Length: 481
Ligand code: SAH
Ligand code: F3S
Image 1 (cartoon, helix red, strand yellow):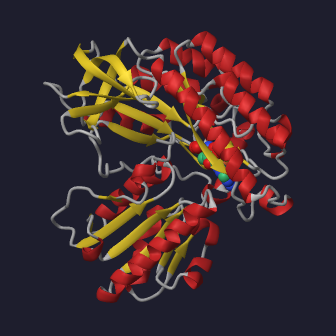
Image 2 (spheres, rainbow, N blue to C red):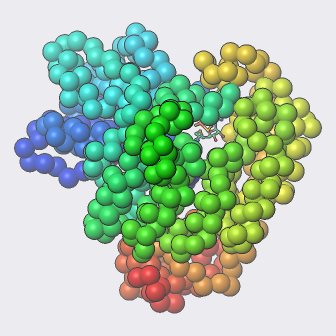
Image 3 (cartoon, rainbow, N blue to C red):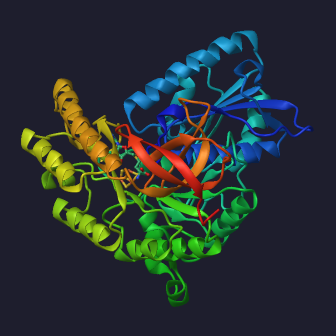
């Protein structure tokens, strides 16, 4: 799972229980990061109040919504291909309406209506509450667009329905948007300015999840460390807040503590962390509460200071290493994972070697590695030539992946011989006789089912492994059960 992107889930359609009064059928498909999957649950919740029930059968849909990703060109191409599939269905179901949601909707706006004839509706990530109105427009034969970005929408007042859930793990959004303006990244343009969600509504959602049997949550944001609640409004307007608001503000480590205390048996994860904003307070809070899992997803992007600067990542590699050292000092068994981009404009062989050196320094547990993809409208897209040849990008990427793989193996092997708590998420993909779960560090563990059930916390003896999966045997319930 990319902190966020789970390749195996890309494009899955999502279903929830049918409300009998709801006669129209919605087919909703999600691509991209976990935030999109979480947003689709908000969308399904809004539309379940508007006469829709969800279906997994494209052929019986009255409305198709596709929640899209713009992060790399390939993500957009995948979605364009998918639209041609919907087009085929429309031939036999002429009343079928198609809406594009999410980042591609926001990036391309009404251009999408011209470029893709199949599309009836274009809805940006802050406009989902307007969906019932937009659908009315579409029903009356007009195309509908709402791509207005908001300074305060967090959907905090909407209780998301859980789609295709394993009943054990769930995402909880805590911030929307991003103010960081990394020069390669389209997110600040597609998801708008950064704002945080009311901690009270976050706690209510977490408590409700626990009451419904969920055992693990992942707090989601483009940059969770930047979370700041001072009564609502944009992060950038904090300096204008009153003294009272400033004194009672809740930052990310405060929020983590509140959530950890609210449900002491719930496993808590969060994603994504940002090296320039992560504080020692956050690491200390992680160390203080047993139920906060010892895993930090801490994208590095590049090991070269020159490239980090060109990316507008506001830290040096030495500062990044210092943060890693502090994490290891405070939480010795903390798993750390990365995102890296190979072939950012002007990247030299020496810069690439710096990235390999960074990998060797940290020896990440796992990571997500990409070739640079120029995004129109971003600073790098406008000001820098995409000058690293494709073949070079590919070669550098494969060197990065090979090195990461060797580190992943070392990290996985280090768990051998230990007994660790695993939360059972469901059957293993390979064998119906085995459970799949994760340890605290997010390493996947498989073991024979025996008497255990989905959602149980089980102590597992780690006996063998592949490079990224531990194979074990349960030795009893954990004390958390
Ligand atoms: N802060 C976000 C980052 C979203 S993008 C989060 O919650 O994860 C996820 C990763 O995609 C980034 O960390 C970066 O490594 C990669 N990425 C972003 N823009 C990219 C681009 N233009 N080309 C290649 N990779 C990119
Ligand atoms: Fe993108 Fe950088 Fe924000 S990667 S989401 S602009 S932290």
